[in-house]
Amino acid sequence: MNRTVSRVLWVIAGVLLIIAGVICLANPGTAIASLAVLLGIVMLFSGIVDIVIFAKGRNYMAGAGWFLVDGILTVLLSLFIMGNQWFTALTLPLIFGMWLLFSGITKFVNSFDLQRLGVRGWGWFTALGVVLAVVGFMSFLNPLASMVAMAVMVGVFFILQGIASILRGCFSGRFWL
Image (cartoon, rainbow, N blue to C red; front, side, top):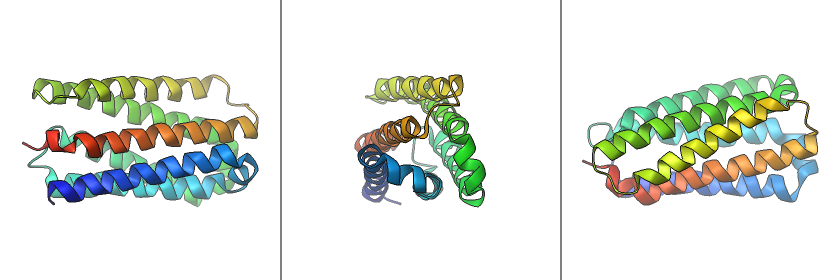
């Protein structure tokens, strides 16, 4: 896979995540009704993009294994969410917390691989990984939050994940060895 295709895929995934976040923020009622399906579909696409980019560029990209780990965890969690929608609605704060915590940790660890390899811009991934992990942990602190507040949190989470994906697209030229 060439650099342009991976860049475009990451940006598309990021834009879709940001659109989903804006929809959740603009229409909390709609978001509450369809949160599990929306969450599952967007997460599935994001995870597949990471796995495809790993498969096509693992020999040419710095820290590619962390893209695979993030992609696999995201796909597995998305399949669980889509298969258990009632359970998802009841446990959404915990599920989102797990996703953001694991995703933040993988981005954080990956940033040090990028630093060791001399990739410029690695600090953005460190900062974003910390923010995602902290927000994920915070979602564990009050799992009984109202669903409207949850829709707002989901919107913000999607936007953060979208920014991370777009950053990957913007900085992907620096990942290739």
